[in-house]
Image (cartoon, rainbow, N blue to C red; front, side, top):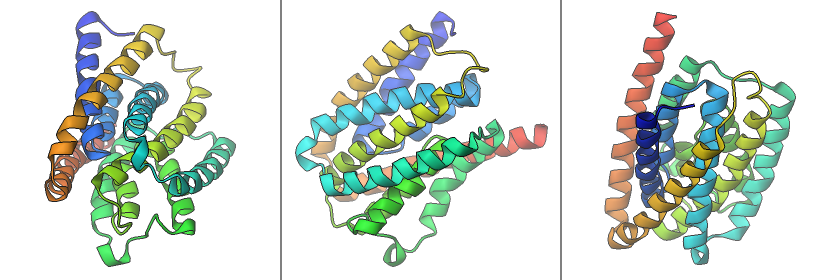
Amino acid sequence: MFSLPVFIGLGVAIAITSFLSGLFGMAGGMVLMGILLAFLPVPLAMVLHAITQIASNGWRAVLWYKYVDLRITGRYAVGAAVALAAWWSIQFVPPKPAALILLGLTPLLARLIPRHHAPNVARPWHALACGLVCSSLQMMAGVSGPILDVFFVNSGLDRRQIVATKAASQTLGHFSKLIYFGALVEHSGSIDPWVAAMAVAMAILGTTASRWVLEAMSDIQWRTWTWRIITAAATVYLVQGIWLLVGV
């Protein structure tokens, strides 16, 4: 599937982006999605991204299991299941320019929602809506971290609880994405088992390395750097998506 230099570069990218995800609870998955879309058709990029993020988020949930809010995660799971059922009936694969544009717009639109109007994932129906909305976004753009963060901004959880609960929830969301796109990759090729194994190993490595840095950061530093990285990545993908759309 990949030449040796690209294989090595992809492994490094997965480790770095998993480190970012482990540190900020998002950002890394968004960066990785853009990288994969540059090399693979949309269905294959979604499948490999799902495999990587299941490993990254799943391992992060294990590392921070004491801080996972199981009530929020359970309600998120119900919403994610509803989203999977709805998208399964549609069987839609977004064009690459559309996926990139949505990938870029999602965090920028999330920032337009006033904090005092943001939904609160600690409320039962809001958590269910979070699972429905975020899982749907994962089917369309591959990621949902920035919108997921909007649901957590008024939750009252600290950075460890946010990272842990988002990790557990995102694991379920990416698993839904894997099921959905796994059934659609027949005409786009397949993921080499060695690539999948490498992705899982590097995701765990990057996630593990992030734990000590997260412990050392303050909540203010954590929030500031999260949005800096997200905004920079969103701008790049939005421009790239528009460029591809105009060039078609």
